[in-house]
Image (cartoon, rainbow over all chains, first blue to last red; front, side, top):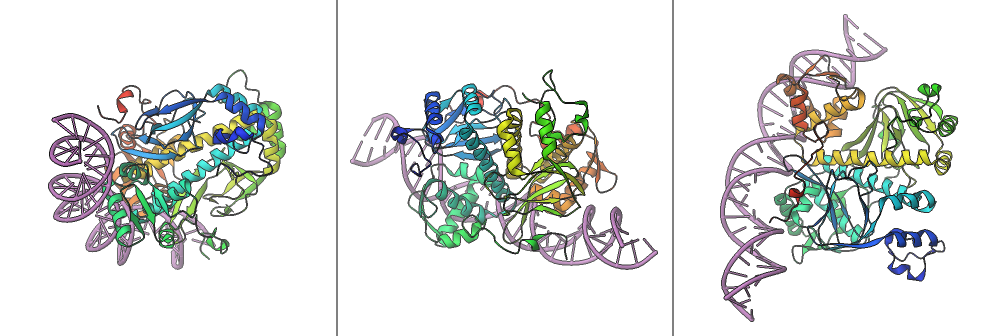
Length: 251
Length: 251
DNA sequence: CGATATCTTGATAAGCATCAATGTGAGTGG
DNA sequence: CCACTCACATTGATGCTTATCAAGATATCG
């Protein structure tokens, strides 16, 4: 992944250790990013920042897993995202963090000063494009999640989640995944309760779609069945024809 | 940050007729946006583009209401957003539209050529900042919606929706709103069925929180009660203290 | 003013939440 | 090294919220 070395890639040899953020950027841009970033670490369950805080620095996850969450006043919780290595936290531009970021596992991060980062953004068109693309991808992911939360059943939610984790952490074709988050995080991410997540996983196991080796290691035995449950068109062909038919006014 | 009408605002008097997109931008930037845009109109229920289409032009809603929706293969539908005047559609940067855009009512739009728009984006730092802020706001809205879909009850969803519409279309303190979309759109936006939306509105009416003058005109009689139902902290004080207490590891 | 879509209301059922125990694994200290 | 403990995961029994199916009321448009 880190090593899609194409002709256009101009990272230095030492870039193997560089933040993923630099990947495929011009050499001078990535050098300046390197200068800007400082290491930061976070132990499991620790918070990086809280919803409502003044937006401070920007963080890149280097290793570990971070959860982004929002709360209702009475304590109900929703995870609005997970950050894997290479993802950024704290990009908000309106002055205040809109979600809380907490470490799920012990994490290594890189910290960037917001002002410096934004200055660099003004000067580096390639970084700018990268950031636009990143925000755009996040928005797409958010919409996927809205569709899931609004319209999928518990089975479909869990199947989608397992496939999503596989895609994010291993390749698209991986069949063994590690769930670094607990059932409560999965539940709050999918809009379910812990019990329903557990029951659903058990059912998928009973039906032979997956098997568990420990509560946090899942083997995807029947991808086809999981994908037809998830049925969000991510793994399947990108819905081709009969598009004109989808118009709503019925005739 | 960039939206407070300060001394730096340099819109021409004629800017009153200019697309909202130009608001508060430098004179030359807004002039160039004006040159770029061409009028476009759409009648109710017509589609602007479909999910999966190659991304073509970018549209700004001038008047009317547009819905953004995603579908599951079996036809289940989720609205991932509404576009009000001033909002943009089709900003995706990955080459393909990720949602379908349809006119709810008759609409007037402005159409921008994507290539030209992106070129202008490279040249106009103020427009660039505006676009970053816009994407950032959309992401925040998406997260609000995820919290709503994942964790709110039907009552809370509908109350949140009514207040949101009031905020978007009138001022924050307005007490009469017009619902230009049908119950089906509201249902698909809130992850409910038409029947549940209807019943919930009826209940709010019976309880004296709102009253209806026609199915599409709502009067908010008891904002306080609606807000405490919605309880997302949008209308209330921006959750101040006791933030350190929200840390999870229980000691 | 009639035809048709949309909205409302009612009866019933399903899916998921809730409450309550039991099982399991990781970390701790004897 | 093993028992102990605590958090976490699983399973079970039950009930509530919301979906579904089915009429009926109202609005909208030609």
